[in-house]
Each structure stands twice: as structure tokens, then as C-alpha cells.
Length: 203
Image 1 (tube, rainbow, N blue to C red):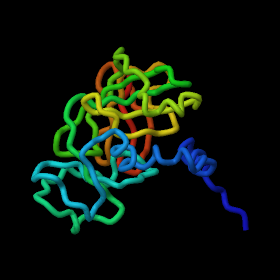
Image 2 (cartoon, rainbow, N blue to C red):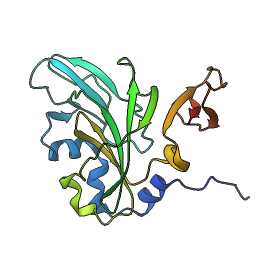
Image 3 (cartoon, helix red, strand yellow):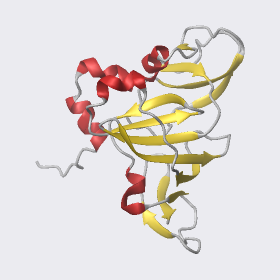
Image 4 (tube, helix red, strand yellow):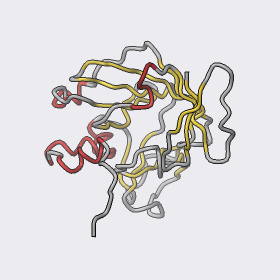
């Protein structure tokens, strides 16, 4: 029996063909430790009571899925296995594409504080973010996408941001149950994701 399977996305291609010596960059706990952030795996105590970000060490789906802002007093034994905690960063959330280490796109994400997955909008900016030196061994990669919060590198993907293809300058996600009628000056496009996004208003 023949099945019509979807074509693998760029991130799936990476996971199928990845050099094992490079895969540390996909583990957010290892990346955070290399960057000297205050962090640790579930099961390790935090150094002081505070707000921390808790999320999966590895998440091939992306989209912020599984991430939560959590007040932790001491122990982390009751948190999901396979997750880690890290100091909570504040500031602009930027998604930056690099081609062979040279920046080609920077967009700023805007969302409410009570969500890690539902963005209100993404806007193209002219900010220049130098290629992170910790990733110098990957400067020969055709495409790398980096996420930053307050100037702190938080995750890396071996793919580009396709939401801003075709000259798009602003991307407003539309979620399940929301009206698809675009505001004046925008158009609606289909753009489904597992986090409940069904499309976007773009201009």
C-alpha cells in the first residue's frame, strides 16, 4: 500500500541528515549552559526563588510549545521530564535569519505577557544583530535562524523564517475562531500551524 506523505520541512531534513557533532545547538539546555545562563535540568534546584522559563530541552516543532513562565522556590522535581529551567529574559523578541553568517532578515515579535505561543504580530525591522560567536562553527551553513530576547540568544534553527517571503513587512497571526476578514490595507493568507494558527493578515 502506498501512502501520500507530506514532503519533509527544512527542519525535518536537518534532523534526518544532521552531523551528530553539531546537534548540541538544538538542545536549548546545552546552548544555555554554553552561554553561561543560570539554568539546569528538571530535578536540579534553582539557586534562588525567582521567575524562570521552563521548556523542553529539545523541541523540533518549535512554536514555543511546552514553554511556561514559572515561579520556582527551590526544587524542580515536579516539572515535566525532558524540560529545563533557565533565567527569565525580558526585552524585544527578535527572530533573525542568517545566510552563511550574514544577516538577511530581522523581525520583532509582539505578544501579551500571559502567553508563550500566541503572538499578536511580527514586524520587519532594520535592526542589525551580529552573528553569535558561539555559532561560528556553523557560519558555513546556508540558513540559520536565531531567536533573541533582550539581546540574549535563546534558540537556533537550521531553517529560515518563511512568514516574511514575498516582501511581507508585517505578519498578524489569525487563530482558530477568529474572523478572517482582513483590516484595510492587509490581506489574509492561509498559514496553519500546530499551535492553533490558521493564517495571517499581511501587508
